[in-house]
Length: 244
Ligand code: PGA
Image (cartoon, rainbow, N blue to C red; front, side, top):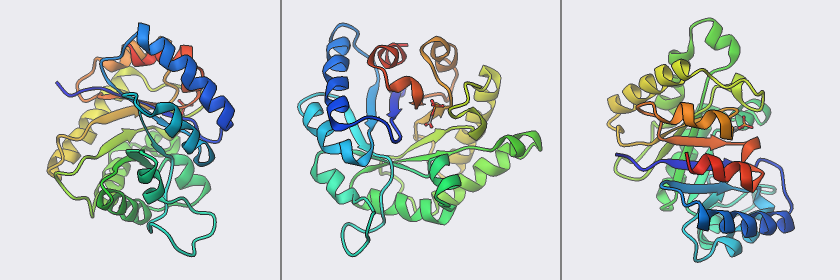
């Protein structure tokens, strides 16, 4: 069975000091409540060094929420995946719905980032998901298929990759998708990945995952873990999710 992945997207929350405090408590909790899966944190860019120091010599992975498609250069305001790598990070989140809707990232941008991140030996976690309007007009499969086919158009098969399915209408809204909707869409995502020769890719669910709904979602085939926003900010709430 594929190992589960429990990922935390901290968005623009926490200072470096709050990051250090979080990891002190979280590592403590983890020692008495170990997870059978892999745990990955995505702190904001300014807190990555604090995370890197706190997580050194632990089994916990981490990465950045976004990156540019060059390692360095005259690109004011961007983040370097190469620097993430040099600090010991393993992952880069790509194409989160907030990047797509607020910062106008397109599928072509996600494709370039996936390719660049893989070329550095880091693991891209590509986020996909439909809006409420798209779901209500029965376009969910069409939308996720487009996001996957275009976003993975330059993927290097054989290199690690993770996909996170996050329905936009479930992110930060408290409206978690039903177990049936999750099972059905994850199956479609799996079929699309399989058609691309990428059936080994873990598929995470995200969107209002909390300690009290995680157990009901994790046991579906093709649900290989979670990407958690709000409920990952508190060590006690996230530890419960990592041990479902
Ligand atoms: P949420 O966010 O858990 O707060 O809904 C998930 C995400 O944006 O990745």
